[in-house]
Length: 220
Picture 1 (cartoon, one colour):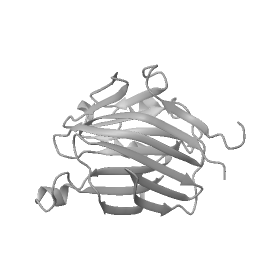
Picture 2 (tube, rainbow, N blue to C red; picture 1 turned 90 degrees about the vertical axis):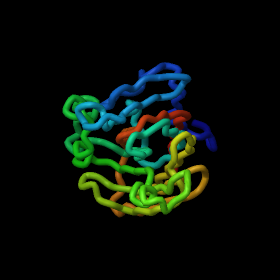
Picture 3 (cartoon, rainbow, N blue to C red; picture 1 turned 90 degrees about the horizontal axis):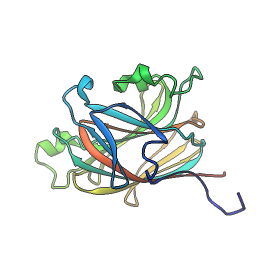
Picture 4 (cartoon, rainbow, N blue to C red; picture 1 turned 120 degrees about the vertical axis):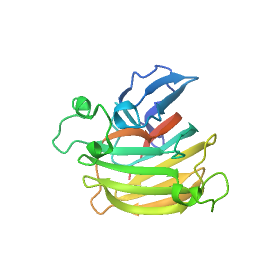
Protein backbone atom coordinates (compact mmCIF):
# COMPACT_ATOMS: atom_id res chain seq x y z
CA UNK A 1 0.00 0.00 0.00
CA UNK A 2 1.48 3.34 -1.01
CA UNK A 3 1.35 6.33 1.28
CA UNK A 4 -2.04 8.03 1.21
CA UNK A 5 -3.76 5.08 -0.50
CA UNK A 6 -6.82 3.83 1.40
CA UNK A 7 -6.54 0.21 2.50
CA UNK A 8 -9.91 -1.19 1.50
CA UNK A 9 -10.50 -4.47 3.33
CA UNK A 10 -14.10 -5.20 2.30
CA UNK A 11 -15.63 -3.89 -0.94
CA UNK A 12 -18.76 -5.93 -1.52
CA UNK A 13 -20.95 -5.54 -4.61
CA UNK A 14 -22.33 -9.12 -4.40
CA UNK A 15 -21.16 -9.86 -7.96
CA UNK A 16 -19.92 -13.20 -6.57
CA UNK A 17 -23.17 -13.92 -4.77
CA UNK A 18 -22.79 -15.08 -1.17
CA UNK A 19 -19.26 -16.38 -1.68
CA UNK A 20 -17.89 -14.12 1.08
CA UNK A 21 -20.80 -14.70 3.49
CA UNK A 22 -22.58 -17.27 5.57
CA UNK A 23 -26.04 -16.97 7.13
CA UNK A 24 -27.49 -17.89 10.52
CA UNK A 25 -31.28 -17.96 10.96
CA UNK A 26 -33.76 -16.11 8.77
CA UNK A 27 -36.59 -17.08 6.47
CA UNK A 28 -34.68 -16.43 3.27
CA UNK A 29 -31.45 -14.69 2.23
CA UNK A 30 -30.55 -14.21 -1.42
CA UNK A 31 -28.95 -11.84 -3.94
CA UNK A 32 -31.20 -9.75 -6.18
CA UNK A 33 -30.27 -6.71 -8.28
CA UNK A 34 -26.77 -6.82 -6.75
CA UNK A 35 -28.21 -6.47 -3.23
CA UNK A 36 -28.23 -8.76 -0.21
CA UNK A 37 -31.90 -9.45 0.45
CA UNK A 38 -32.75 -10.58 3.98
CA UNK A 39 -36.27 -11.71 4.83
CA UNK A 40 -36.74 -12.36 8.53
CA UNK A 41 -40.27 -11.37 9.44
CA UNK A 42 -41.58 -14.61 10.93
CA UNK A 43 -43.30 -14.87 14.28
CA UNK A 44 -40.66 -16.83 16.22
CA UNK A 45 -36.95 -17.73 16.01
CA UNK A 46 -37.63 -21.23 14.70
CA UNK A 47 -39.50 -19.77 11.73
CA UNK A 48 -37.28 -16.87 10.80
CA UNK A 49 -37.87 -13.92 13.13
CA UNK A 50 -34.11 -13.19 13.35
CA UNK A 51 -31.24 -13.42 10.92
CA UNK A 52 -27.49 -12.71 10.85
CA UNK A 53 -25.26 -12.69 7.77
CA UNK A 54 -21.51 -12.80 8.47
CA UNK A 55 -18.77 -11.57 6.17
CA UNK A 56 -15.94 -14.12 6.07
CA UNK A 57 -13.27 -11.43 5.59
CA UNK A 58 -11.76 -10.31 8.94
CA UNK A 59 -11.51 -6.59 9.51
CA UNK A 60 -8.84 -4.70 11.52
CA UNK A 61 -9.40 -3.05 14.94
CA UNK A 62 -9.56 0.48 13.49
CA UNK A 63 -11.70 1.13 10.45
CA UNK A 64 -14.30 3.18 8.62
CA UNK A 65 -17.39 1.29 7.45
CA UNK A 66 -20.00 2.54 5.00
CA UNK A 67 -23.04 0.69 3.70
CA UNK A 68 -26.65 1.14 2.63
CA UNK A 69 -29.69 -0.47 4.25
CA UNK A 70 -33.32 -0.32 3.09
CA UNK A 71 -36.32 -1.73 4.97
CA UNK A 72 -38.86 -3.12 2.53
CA UNK A 73 -41.44 -4.10 5.14
CA UNK A 74 -41.90 -5.10 8.78
CA UNK A 75 -45.09 -6.61 10.15
CA UNK A 76 -44.33 -5.22 13.60
CA UNK A 77 -42.93 -1.90 12.29
CA UNK A 78 -39.63 -2.79 13.93
CA UNK A 79 -37.64 -1.62 10.87
CA UNK A 80 -34.72 -3.30 12.58
CA UNK A 81 -31.22 -2.61 11.22
CA UNK A 82 -28.38 -4.12 13.26
CA UNK A 83 -24.62 -4.04 12.74
CA UNK A 84 -22.15 -6.41 14.42
CA UNK A 85 -18.43 -5.64 14.25
CA UNK A 86 -15.15 -6.66 15.92
CA UNK A 87 -16.81 -10.03 16.55
CA UNK A 88 -14.82 -13.05 17.66
CA UNK A 89 -15.06 -15.96 20.08
CA UNK A 90 -13.14 -15.41 23.35
CA UNK A 91 -12.09 -19.06 23.17
CA UNK A 92 -10.29 -18.47 19.89
CA UNK A 93 -12.55 -20.78 17.87
CA UNK A 94 -13.37 -19.18 14.47
CA UNK A 95 -17.02 -18.10 14.28
CA UNK A 96 -17.47 -20.04 11.05
CA UNK A 97 -16.58 -23.27 12.82
CA UNK A 98 -19.21 -22.70 15.52
CA UNK A 99 -21.95 -21.48 13.17
CA UNK A 100 -24.16 -24.55 13.68
CA UNK A 101 -24.50 -23.72 17.38
CA UNK A 102 -26.17 -20.45 16.29
CA UNK A 103 -28.30 -21.87 13.49
CA UNK A 104 -31.49 -20.18 14.79
CA UNK A 105 -29.61 -16.84 15.29
CA UNK A 106 -31.09 -16.30 18.75
CA UNK A 107 -29.86 -12.90 19.99
CA UNK A 108 -28.50 -14.24 23.28
CA UNK A 109 -26.08 -16.53 21.44
CA UNK A 110 -24.11 -13.47 20.34
CA UNK A 111 -23.96 -11.81 23.76
CA UNK A 112 -21.30 -14.20 25.08
CA UNK A 113 -18.94 -13.43 22.19
CA UNK A 114 -16.55 -10.49 21.80
CA UNK A 115 -18.12 -7.75 19.71
CA UNK A 116 -19.96 -4.48 19.31
CA UNK A 117 -23.61 -4.09 18.31
CA UNK A 118 -25.21 -0.97 16.84
CA UNK A 119 -29.01 -1.11 16.56
CA UNK A 120 -30.89 1.40 14.41
CA UNK A 121 -34.64 0.85 14.47
CA UNK A 122 -38.09 2.36 14.73
CA UNK A 123 -38.88 3.79 18.17
CA UNK A 124 -42.06 1.74 18.45
CA UNK A 125 -43.16 3.04 21.84
CA UNK A 126 -43.42 6.64 20.66
CA UNK A 127 -44.63 5.97 17.14
CA UNK A 128 -47.35 3.52 18.16
CA UNK A 129 -48.80 6.28 20.34
CA UNK A 130 -48.92 8.57 17.34
CA UNK A 131 -46.54 11.15 18.79
CA UNK A 132 -44.19 11.11 15.81
CA UNK A 133 -44.77 11.99 12.16
CA UNK A 134 -43.72 9.72 9.31
CA UNK A 135 -41.09 8.55 8.72
CA UNK A 136 -40.98 7.25 12.29
CA UNK A 137 -38.45 8.40 14.89
CA UNK A 138 -35.45 6.15 15.36
CA UNK A 139 -33.98 4.58 18.45
CA UNK A 140 -30.21 4.04 18.32
CA UNK A 141 -28.17 1.89 20.71
CA UNK A 142 -24.52 0.87 20.96
CA UNK A 143 -23.55 -2.19 23.00
CA UNK A 144 -20.44 -4.16 23.88
CA UNK A 145 -20.17 -7.90 24.35
CA UNK A 146 -19.59 -10.16 26.22
CA UNK A 147 -22.31 -8.96 28.52
CA UNK A 148 -24.56 -7.00 26.15
CA UNK A 149 -23.48 -3.84 27.98
CA UNK A 150 -25.09 -0.59 26.86
CA UNK A 151 -22.49 2.04 25.96
CA UNK A 152 -24.84 4.73 24.63
CA UNK A 153 -28.43 5.26 23.52
CA UNK A 154 -30.28 8.07 21.81
CA UNK A 155 -33.53 8.89 20.00
CA UNK A 156 -33.86 11.00 16.89
CA UNK A 157 -33.71 11.17 13.10
CA UNK A 158 -35.96 8.46 11.62
CA UNK A 159 -35.99 4.81 10.60
CA UNK A 160 -38.79 4.19 8.13
CA UNK A 161 -39.77 1.74 5.44
CA UNK A 162 -39.04 2.39 1.78
CA UNK A 163 -36.08 4.64 2.64
CA UNK A 164 -32.47 3.88 1.71
CA UNK A 165 -30.22 4.83 4.62
CA UNK A 166 -26.48 5.35 4.25
CA UNK A 167 -24.82 4.13 7.45
CA UNK A 168 -21.30 4.91 8.61
CA UNK A 169 -19.33 3.48 11.54
CA UNK A 170 -15.89 4.77 12.49
CA UNK A 171 -13.82 2.99 15.11
CA UNK A 172 -10.55 4.51 16.30
CA UNK A 173 -9.24 2.44 19.19
CA UNK A 174 -11.93 2.88 21.86
CA UNK A 175 -13.80 5.71 20.14
CA UNK A 176 -16.81 4.57 18.11
CA UNK A 177 -19.04 6.89 16.08
CA UNK A 178 -22.23 6.12 14.16
CA UNK A 179 -23.80 8.36 11.51
CA UNK A 180 -26.77 8.01 9.15
CA UNK A 181 -27.02 9.99 5.92
CA UNK A 182 -24.10 12.10 7.07
CA UNK A 183 -25.76 13.03 10.37
CA UNK A 184 -23.84 12.00 13.52
CA UNK A 185 -26.24 10.13 15.82
CA UNK A 186 -24.14 8.38 18.44
CA UNK A 187 -20.61 8.38 19.86
CA UNK A 188 -19.21 6.28 22.67
CA UNK A 189 -15.90 5.43 24.28
CA UNK A 190 -15.02 1.83 25.06
CA UNK A 191 -12.34 1.87 27.79
CA UNK A 192 -11.22 -1.64 26.78
CA UNK A 193 -11.12 -1.51 22.96
CA UNK A 194 -11.81 -4.67 21.02
CA UNK A 195 -9.43 -5.84 18.33
CA UNK A 196 -9.89 -7.33 14.89
CA UNK A 197 -12.96 -9.42 14.15
CA UNK A 198 -15.84 -10.07 11.78
CA UNK A 199 -18.64 -7.92 10.40
CA UNK A 200 -22.23 -9.11 10.73
CA UNK A 201 -25.50 -7.78 9.31
CA UNK A 202 -28.56 -8.61 11.40
CA UNK A 203 -32.28 -7.97 11.63
CA UNK A 204 -35.39 -8.87 13.66
CA UNK A 205 -38.98 -9.10 12.34
CA UNK A 206 -37.97 -7.19 9.21
CA UNK A 207 -37.53 -7.68 5.46
CA UNK A 208 -34.70 -5.48 4.17
CA UNK A 209 -31.76 -5.29 1.80
CA UNK A 210 -28.09 -4.29 2.17
CA UNK A 211 -25.76 -2.83 -0.46
CA UNK A 212 -22.54 -0.88 -1.17
CA UNK A 213 -20.55 -2.31 1.74
CA UNK A 214 -17.08 -0.86 2.06
CA UNK A 215 -14.75 -1.18 5.03
CA UNK A 216 -11.45 0.71 5.02
CA UNK A 217 -8.63 0.18 7.50
CA UNK A 218 -7.50 3.24 9.45
CA UNK A 219 -3.83 3.71 10.23
CA UNK A 220 -3.53 5.59 13.52
